[in-house]
Amino acid sequence: MTAGERATLRRWTSLAQWVGTDRGVAAIDSVEEAWPGYADTAARSILNAYYTDPHVIGAVWSWLAEHGVAEGVGFEPGCGRGDWIALAPPALRFDGVDIDPISVTVARALTGENIAEARIEEWHIARSEQARVNGGYDVVVGNVPFSSQRPSTNNPHRDSLHNLAIGRSVAMLRPGGVAAVLTSRFSLDAGNPKWRQRTSAQVDLVAAFRLPSRTHREAGTDVVTDLLILRRPHPGEARPTADWVDTTT
Image 1 (tube, rainbow, N blue to C red):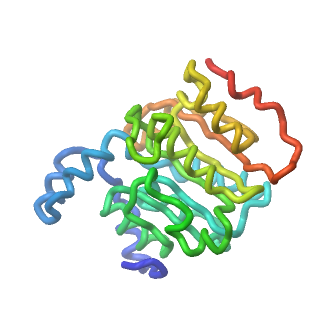
Image 2: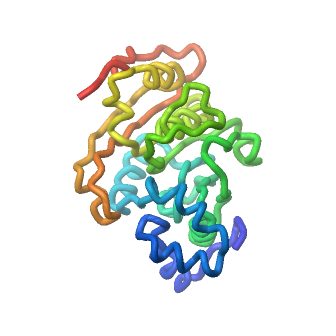
């Protein structure tokens, strides 16, 4: 399916059960038989691919809607099957990226939005006509891929994958744009504050919530995550003190 097409209800229900490459090697092997080369892609994503509970997604969207985020152009880094985009307000148009080709196909079918097979570190506004015309993104959402791996492309500070995903995403926000992202607790907890210092130069931390470890249990993990709400200020706007830069637990 291509961008702009949506699945029928029956097909949507079936596709929504796709859980990506986080469920084991056997599933990957079966796909590899029909799709040679898929195992290499799966190996790159299996350590950090899992999906967010719809109740969490719904709560985040409710919070964003209450704070005026309901239209414009959005972006999701590491969109998986497209749950965040599928539950977004109808007036929002979206770009999403993921390295897993099957997840990309499923997300396109579920959402009808512009979903690209691409690495987060390779995505930029010029690759999206709607983002380019809009002057950037009004909102960024999602559960960014977690990994201590440090991509070599477009990563001059050698950030971990999750920190790089957040940094590149907020850099594409329009002034006044908001990001609501789930990330590893180490984005805030890391003893070295340099990533937080660089990020605070671009955006303000509006709120941060540490989620219970059981939040993602249905996805097969008890990883501890934080929900960060970040906002890009307008030029010349008075900004709060970035006291979160030195926050650790």
